[in-house]
Image (cartoon, rainbow, N blue to C red):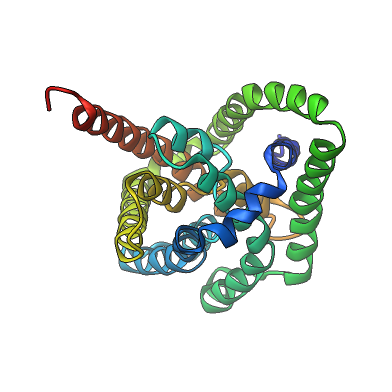
Length: 290
């Protein structure tokens, strides 16, 4: 079974659902509170790929896995980050704005970063990147669904809300199904490489979260904003990375997608732990007996 026929509709639905949740007010936050938006985008667009390259090089990843880890690092924020931000008592409006902005900005930054990555290490693995195909695929699979969702939200808000309520219930199970099928197809490689690849990706996520916290400190953000920045920088769109890796128009190489599968697993474990700790300490701080 070719996983591309599973991940394509999942990614399209996720982007359409993101469009359904957006309002013009979400983009006004860029002007109203530029510092937290700038901190989040710097962390996602610039800092995370630099961390991924440093970590992948330090752990001597194979060229295909290094390409894969760079691919997940330069992908936009995951749509489930909004839910995680809410659970962590973060700034949900900021989370939505960052997810929307990163989804649009990375339409153009992903081809640039991945072109540099494949030029640097792709020759040793006989991997080439058709930049034009990647750019066109991003526009069709991400920009168009987001714009369709935006239009439906503006034209038929009630219908958009009903569709969103359905999609948000099936999005996570769909990703779990994708991860399960992918694991079954590549279980030997994943099990064999998990000790080194799992450690590498765990370090990547922890450094990304730490980088988000450091940026929040430098930009003097509030506690709620800081929690959101940590989540946004640490949680990327694994579905998009898998799509780019498996797409016959781009890499057509499922081995490159393996880091994204491992990332999706470790990302949810570490971010859920962060949410639990944030909630615990927030409750203690707000307790009348503290």
